Figure 1 (cartoon, rainbow, N blue to C red):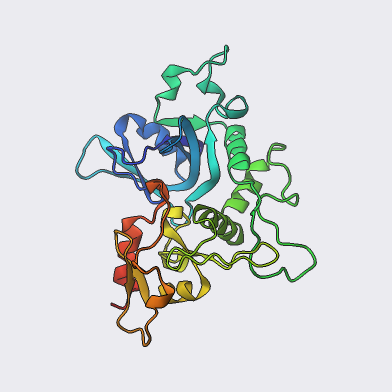
Figure 2 (figure 1 turned 90 degrees about the horizontal axis):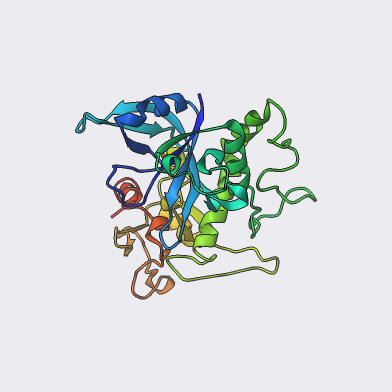
Length: 302
């Protein structure tokens, strides 16, 4: 098993859904086969930004053949392993994370940069994870820690430096699959994208300690196979989150707020007057229609 970089572009010609599957031509099959059972890093352009970036991770579970295109395959992601980075990592920052991407004179290696699947050295993967997932949560959780010590978010000192020693990869992997760690990252990413503001009500309540009332809501819950992609999330205030999870509220593909007929009271005064959710401007970060469709068909009590 090896780590690798997978090139992905939003709205590409390939049938990609980064959280669940990666579509690729046969020429990369031997490389992708090496990654089964291990983590990959997504890489490519980000809408509205000028360069190429590492943006997320996922664990490859299996490979399947494209039934409609004989020359193409799918790399299937293990459920609930996709995770966005805290920020897009520009490919050349700090001298570059993949040394083969650059010539001795520091210029990009054109022949290597165009490869859609690139094998990563373990230390390169570790460097990307540390750079992409180590930012502390700017706004702590609403609930206080049970002890005098605040809850740790990110890679704490308890996990020894992953740059040192042959066991370094184990510390990284144990953190990446840790549910509290992933919950903290998902909460951080959603709150930042929505500026700590409820998408349905416009409420932005902050207490004296800087803690926001708004919560990070999974559209498809984790217990139902949902992942931690920001496209499977939305920022909602506590009461609205409760109603969304119980199917009393939902969202159309064009982000119209849908209210269940089973509501026994009128909540329209709590919501945006135009009944439209306020979602991120960049379509890369908006709730994906696939997740919204699932919620309407599996949770919403129309």
